[in-house]
Image (cartoon, rainbow, N blue to C red; front, side, top):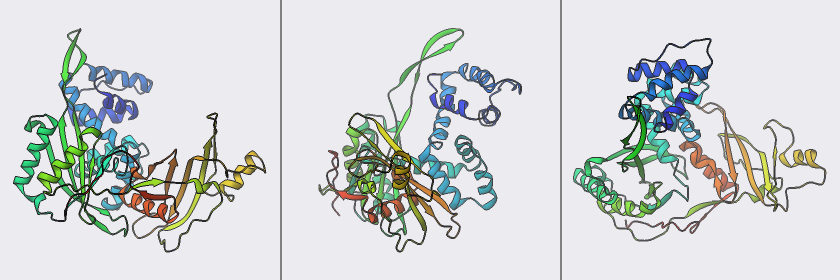
Length: 410
């Protein structure tokens, strides 16, 4: 099914009985009975044949649902779901959710049992995955007046302008505006975050399918999404889109038609990570950190000039630090000092506070300026931002990339 990548992936990762039940309950598909003695590969082959025989448009409708479930099955999606499960589920539902081990089954369970939560988590994941990634976002300043966000005329003008920019008919562009809470980066207090999601159809794609034993071609139309987030507490407006060439134009449409404030040109600092100080033993300052129990470097690595890579790994409960462990593994004279690190993993243990359970946050820093905290759920990202700055592993600079980053007039 080359026109249904996500559906194929879902079929391959869900237990055959779970997938069969899902197809029957949601799409009223008659799947073959499963032979319990048969291998899972053979069980899936029978169901795949049913899906492959569907009309392309019917299969595409299922593919769109499968894509949403897959999006909440990866690391960023699971981070979002974990956050929502701790804050929204009652104890019984949370226990049922946490008992599911497969990330694909967890995402499917949310889809089937908590539809509204699924939509909120999907939107949060789609926006958060791009935030603070220099290759995928442009940041702007926005005005403090929010009344324009509630103005129907302003929304319609924005809708029309976006359609014109994307070269789509207005009825092939969908715009959603909603508000959610997020922790403030500096204080940790919950503040408003407005999100505008822009969905539009891409040009039709031609795919092959079999009908009446003949190979024929049919058109498939896929929708893509861009996100704009606006944080009134600091006035930041971020344009989140994989279409890098159109981000500035989209930002100007938002500023002109939705927020109604011109761009001035003031730059907003971006973050750059610097973890080279971890090449020597150090103590992490936890002064005033009531939620953080302990921190440890559990993995550290470097790449030599001949592209050979060494990574040392230890467990969190190891009595030695990473440098002592490296000497015991490699030799008494070994040291990371004098070598340029290309990989580091920190394990941050959090205490049980209120309804939040004790857990561990893993922060991975790699290469020149890559860090996985942008894929964490919002509360964890804010905490990690603050801790990395406190430990001098991150700094703010203004010209990390060539991307235009401006400000809007207040």
